[in-house]
Length: 299
Image 1 (cartoon, rainbow, N blue to C red):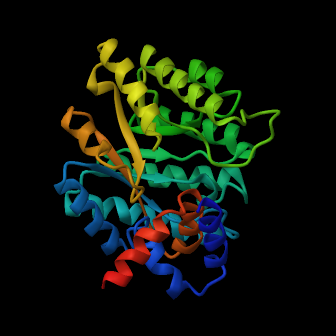
Image 2: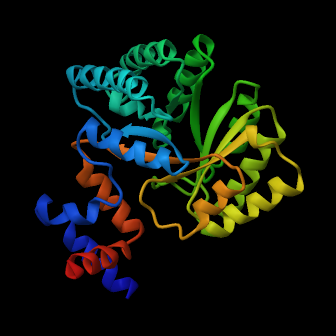
């Protein structure tokens, strides 16, 4: 069945977008800002908080990067207007990092000013290894201006334990995740169990330090392991949150975390670039195809 699922997803990636859309809808809030607002309001009503991401990366011109900058600035205005319990996550390459790091920095600083205007938080996503140092550098420059800014570290990279140690401070706010990009074994752990253990150790290191950690994983046994450690060590709920991608099936686990009084944040993506993002999610979890097909045939 796993092989059949994988083959179906590969085939689906070559289909017209209108055919793929029903399979994408569980993972993507929609195309427009209105779609994202509606989704976040529903999540907020259920007790979840959110971080909103405009889908896309690796823009190819300064003009594209300026548009994305303006879109993010307008998104902060809309979050404030709608009184959403949400912040924003953004990718440096979506704001021009691949073209010129100084371009990305300028655009990020502009978005940061809008976050500051609304007293909201901004998360700088981490992409693949060529951008790690530049992203950390920009994060540190932003943090010097405004303390409600965070970044992301990936546990499969060998360097991450040292990065956590070097960045540790009372202002350090880090989403820790396993990592999704293909990286060389020279710089990244490759075995699933090894990466799982590294995320556990990295989360503990941040919680044993001065910072705040957003634990981003759909690995339920790992969530339980971290939860048990948090309980055993009497870690304050003010020091962490759990994060998941919108739409990824988690059984009752998210509600269980909410019932414990934990903050649970959904990563809510939207935008015109929904197709490539959705194909990636389906490759990670092809079983979702059968849920969608079942609902289609019921209708």
